[in-house]
Image (cartoon, rainbow, N blue to C red; front, side, top):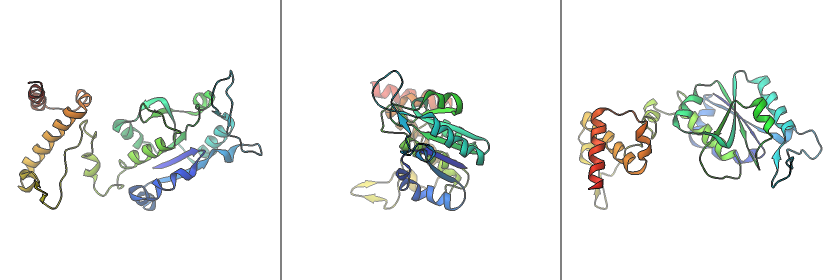
Length: 245
């Protein structure tokens, strides 16, 4: 999987991309991340990448010329690349979108800044606009890191076990069940007996019910789209009635 990230602040990525799973995946050749400084493609001596908006108004707008030159330079080397712009008006990034993007050969991510990018960048080059949430950040660099991390986890071989991503929160529409490890007892709090039983069927059932309980308690909005059996829906109805009584 190939990632090309266009940014005005490439130094922001050195920490997150040089640690943990992302670092190992890059060293193993499973992902290839390249950072491109947009200012390198500006043609004036001041390397200007932004300017005041036509029509007036506060803030600055990222210029079309350096962005276009940078995108076209990447496209020369990367075939079948999907161009993504990080922007508050984009599609909400979630696990299903991460899975969709993981099927691509290559992603080019433009990190928005200031008041945004010149609209002609969207019109001429962008395939998809993505937002990681309804809140304001200084720029799209953190959003790009989130996208790369979430997508990379879904690439075969990046995680130690294929089951790891399959059991993550949101992978099946529910929040993840609680986890425990040694010691079995800590300050009077013990591990649920079912997890010590060795009965894998009962453990699976317990984990599923815990996931249902957690989702109902904190993210009930997810249940509408979750893949649930008839028995699980009945179980949720019983839980909901118990909360109301």
